[in-house]
Structure formats: structure tokens, C-alpha cells
Image (cartoon, rainbow, N blue to C red; front, side, top):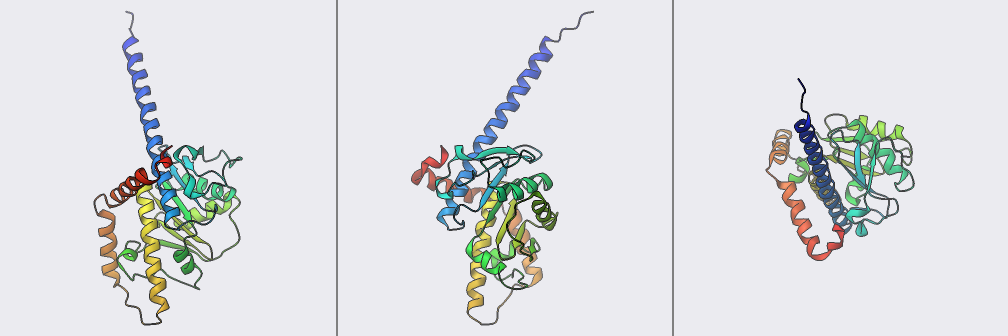
Length: 262
């Protein structure tokens, strides 16, 4: 009896074609979302010069990711400018050395880090410069990060090798999604571009409130621990907030800076 594999081969080819199209669609969407995040980071002054970096994973294992090219200003980045690379490939000529050292290891070692945002945004960075500072539960935005902030208090220069990325990944561990880098800045990780950028935005707003409150010299009224924990859970289960936030920002860019999509 002769078996006919024609149908099976055709089915396999169709499935492979669908997978390729799905991956292409995912890359297209992620490029536009990440480009929008760069443009809004520039508008909100969350970036610094050409020194900061955002990345977003494409593959299921998070090892394949998009990242901003070396030397590009956030306000000019387009979807097509983003560099597609894999952890283990090396920085090459197109990726900043510090970006590679941090982002490649975070994507490789922390599967939930689908999006990794590193900035020197001013209010959070100011708090990282206070001795033994602990992020306070002062307002609703701050409560979103209850028990989710880790600290690296020993600034030791620029991150130029993979050992530094591995150390940072260990500090974040399985519980934390925010890392305060002492005398340096912050890293925020999330399961999507929308989630990570929304949290970056809310973190800087909460830090601004804290800097302003500290500047008054008056006693601070912190939110009780049990209430902060409740608010954190409410934030994390609030339906589609981050996605709708990013959609709104993309809608503005579509009208005012449509070249980000190119």
C-alpha cells in the first residue's frame, strides 16, 4: 500500500506560511508601538541625549528583540530604524554597548521581560541619588509599584559587559518589575510595550509628586501598607488601561508625527 503524503505536505506548508505571516504582523505592530514609545518619551522629557534605550521581544523565548540604533535621538526614531537582533549576537556596529550589555541579558534571563525600558528620567533619577531612599507610597500612582521596586545602590560606572546585565537581572528577580539604579536612572520591564510604557509614565509622575512633597519639608502622609497593596492589585487588574493609553498616544502621533510609522 502506497501512502499519499501530498495533503499532509500541503497542510504543513500552509501552517508554516501562517506562522511566518503571524511573525511578520507581530514585528510590524511591535515596531510601530515601540517607535511611538520613543517619540512620547522625547515629548515628555523622559530620555537623555542619545544615551537611553528601549527594547521589545518578538520571539516566544524573548531572545529575539528590537532595540533603538546607536546614536539615534528618541524624537526622530521611526519604526524601520529599530534594529532586530538576538541575545548572543553581540552589539555589532549598530547597537550601543551599554544597551546591549543590559537588554540582551534581561531578555535572555527574564522571559516575562517582553519590553525593557531604561531611562535617566529626571524625577526618578533624583530619587536614586538620595541615600538609602525607599520609594514611598504617597499617591495612587506610587501604589501601583507596591513591593515591585528593587534597588541597586552601588553605582560602579557604565554597564559595558554582559556580567552587568546578569547582575541587574538577578536584582530584578521574579518579583520586581522596576529597578532603581543608584546615581544613574531606572529600568522598567513589562509584558508588552503598552504595559511597560504606561508604567514608566506613572512611575515618573509618582516620583515627581514625591520630589515635590519632600521639597515642602512638611511631614509626609504615606498610604497604609494594606491600602497600597490593594491599590496595586487594582492597578494590575484594571482592564486595558495601558493598551488604551498607548492607543491614545498613537492616535496623536498619527495626526502630528505620522513619520514614526515609516
